[in-house]
Image (cartoon, rainbow, N blue to C red; front, side):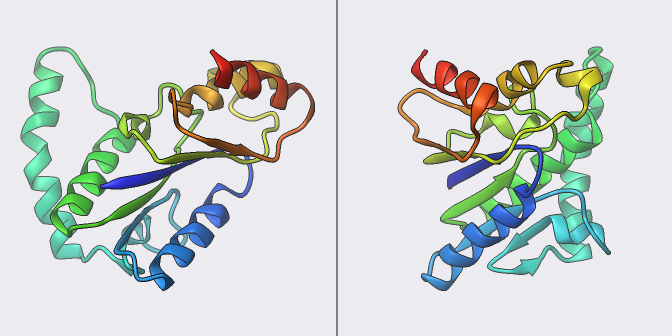
Length: 173
C-alpha cells in the first residue's frame, strides 16, 4: 500500500484523521494507524473508518506471536508498539488498502512505523517531549522526528525557528 507518514509533538492524530477523511471521501480505500486509543484499542487500526474487529485483531496477533517469540529467543525484544505496527500493516495489506495514514508513535527515526516508504511525510509542530529518549533540545528532538524524511519524498511542515532549520537540513542531505 501507498502511505502518508505523520510525525510531530502535537496534533498528529488530528492531521492523520483529516488526511484519512480526505482520502476516504475521495473514494480511496484507506487504512489509519494512530496511537494511543481513546476508548478501545481497536480504534488504533481502521480501514475506511471502520476499526479492526476483536476477531481480526486476535487472529493477526496470533499470527505474529511466533515471530515475536523467535525474535525474543535470539535476544531481540519486540516492543508492544512494534507488534501493534506489524498487526496494523499486515491488516492493511490483507484488506487491500490503497493508502495508509500512519502516525509515528514516538520520535520518528527509530519508530516502528518508519519501515514504510511514504508518498509524503508531514512533520507537525515540535516542542519539548520525551527528552529522556529524543534529546534535551528542540534541535535534537527535531532531528529525531525528521528521521521519517526519505530521499525524493516531499515533506510538509509548519515548523519555524530551530525545528524548521533542522528539518530543512535533514531534507537536503
